[in-house]
View 1: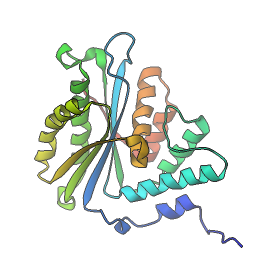
View 2 (view 1 turned 120 degrees about the vertical axis):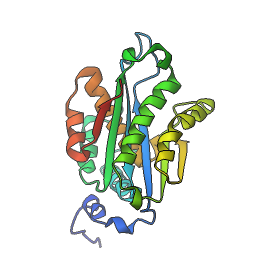
View 3 (view 1 turned 30 degrees about the horizontal axis):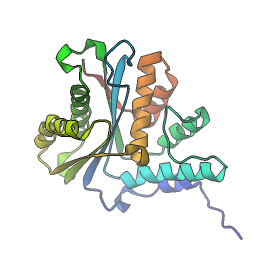
View 4 (view 1 turned 90 degrees about the horizontal axis):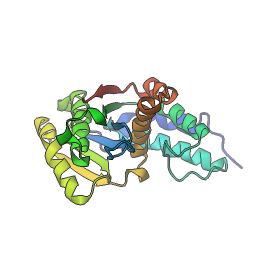
Length: 231
């Protein structure tokens, strides 16, 4: 015998109060990027970095996990969400689920790579310029008195040596916040909050690269991201 839930799993999880999180005094900033580091004519014209900032990563993660399990139950072989590879109907479900995310902030920074001064046309500099911008936005949008520490998690797009250069470049932004902080480079593709950041960056990227408006409109409706060019 089965027991029917009065509401869908996604709606139920979204209703769980933020106070249920055991890590509510830490601000988690998940950062992913779209575009490449190729500054030649064969490279992407734009580079985008997006951040999902939340003190309740369990809430947003539960919403995404619930969607994945629903899709699995429907016979869809979904191991993770990746905007550039997902089918359109899956993207639509993801965007719909993002409307249920509460207490999270989204931030996007982008640039036309051809407009960068020559000295900044490297992977490390590009990462640092956009990374500083989204971290600065994330910190400026929260009450520092309610935050005990900051955890920044980025994808492993840079090699180990250049990760250290990035840490050095963004550390001043975090030090000004005057709270303990940690910066990690991990495989964000396997973190559902990182997958939300992927959807954020991809949505802005396709708007800039090929004037595809629908994904970005969906993101604006769901998460109302701050949005700024860095050049």
